[in-house]
Image 1: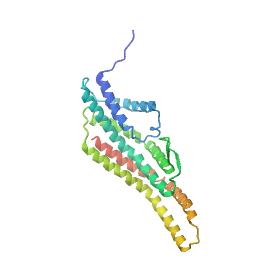
Image 2: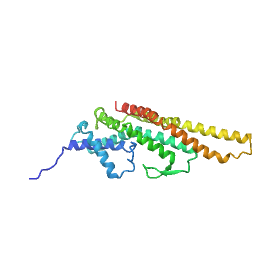
Image 3: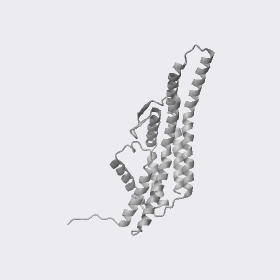
Image 4: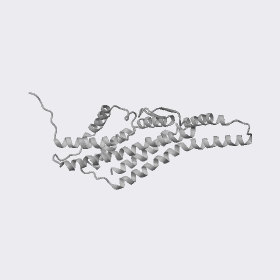
Length: 255
């Protein structure tokens, strides 16, 4: 006698709604190597997170209309995108830092393979994103994402979640902080490059026979690499402060 595996229709509807919420966020969450993973591996990761949230899955009516259910799916995916955007800003701030530093230090034409996208990327930008990804895992921020989803399923269960227009304003203000954090990290490099340029210009003005133009680029590269090495010690502090701010904003969306 063969046994048949069966599941209530309402449970399947609940699973699909939670899956849409989790999958929407994973588009922007800066987990190391997620964007370069094969599609089956990414699907297994999303399914694993969804199944880990089983104790807080909501109860869904077994016979919703097709139009209503599609609307719930769209709302869940949009909510997941909002959470994923807030978390993705952590990596974007570091990327902006790398772009500014690479331009000022003369690394514009120096490129390497980005481990996340497998595409050519400026050296400093790839380094900054790799450090951000390592800090994301080291600080255990991936656990906070699962906790946010678990609490959101209690406070805003699927089929009862309504998108708030005020959320767009919150996310836009949070996006502005990317520029603030990126400039905060890059300003020491920019200031140092200005000092080097002004110093060489003054020396050339004092003694026109000095051929200092050939020393400009090596001095900039050496000074920038030394300053970036020193800034790496401040990265965990600034990154954790910024992550705390972003997760506070994410928690405000689910309350």
